[in-house]
Image (cartoon, rainbow, N blue to C red; front, side, top):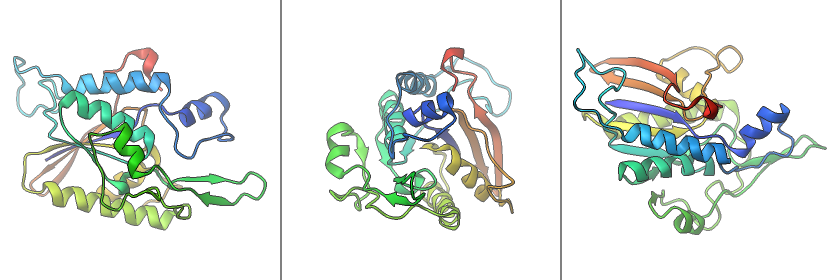
Length: 242
């Protein structure tokens, strides 16, 4: 099995932070920026490439011959869905929505006066179906929105969720030669990597840098978990690196 964990393309919240170093005015569920849409398209073309004429000595750890992606999963946050939709379209695959891939915290906004967090609904089933008809939704997504105004997620909850995600992916693809693209988020990726490699660390002493549309490849070989590469963005045009 090969897993490709991919951070979504640039969102309006990413641009806000890069520009102001502040989250004041953030959206609870931001869309992609114009740059983000270009990043998603470049990612999709990169993953769709096939170079069977190239000769590789040993295992193709740099994907010189291509990726051969068989499955594409995505968080249900709009920036991830939009990124995943571009990838799935280029690969002629269905995009599979996996709720547990969402960013740390969930769908929420903070009251700047009180400091309190308020959970918000998230997008509805009809919204997803009208905008992303190729997205396979979990049965739990309905017209109340997929987040359903739950409270903001705490660290203990995100750690437990990362374990669920990894176990679910391994269970679904165990014993196969599947190559799985997983569109997720920056902060959650840090927790997920800690989980996969059984690190006894917290957010205070471990943080994973992930550029927008960066790839991290992890292979499962027999009883080994192999980190092949991390935060791969060399395929992007320099003006698209964020």
